[in-house]
Length: 257
Image (tube, rainbow, N blue to C red; front, side):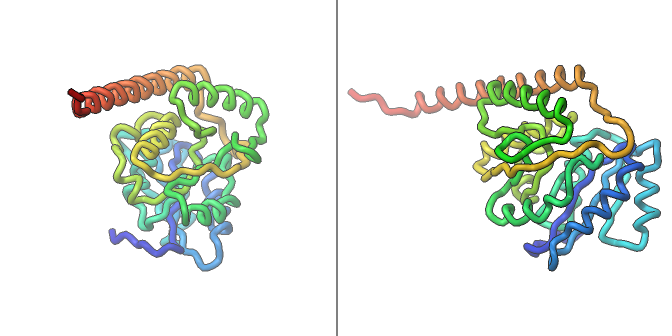
């Protein structure tokens, strides 16, 4: 595959599992949101959904080469699907979004516009102007993001949103194996390693909608446990890295006589 680097072309990556009730509507909304003069490909990365998501996309868009369904039958998982999409994207600029209609494609032009300047543009529920239609979910996520910000000592306000625009080459330079595993917690790892690499990050206020068809795959108790465990591991890594850096600085600092 030849990577296309034109600034007016981008790839949208949609990880799917049992999203047959949402995916066609979402792809059509994405195509309607593409700014005039831009070229867009849509990669549907399906984890072998038993509801036939992959077959539905393949059949519905069989005459549209800009929609590329990709079936994954091994080493499956949400974050790994996103990585697969990034690695297989045809364009340098990428947008990653959920496939359940909670991320609104109407925000794509704004993400692309600001993405001309920043390496990562993150659609944020919690910066000024950001919100969620589901108020209960909003408050729960807000409180948990406060905890994450304290644990990770980050100024990023929404560490789990997962709706972002980025430069593909910059993402691929990060330690992919240390980021893309698990579920939504991959996102705060991505932001951490991106900041550590000196990438520029900005949050844009975003409105997260209600899920479309189907039921959420999220188990709140399991998510809180797994996300907190992942955050503590990352916190330990950060502390170790800072300690190692401090030791190195001490060993290289000349002593006055």
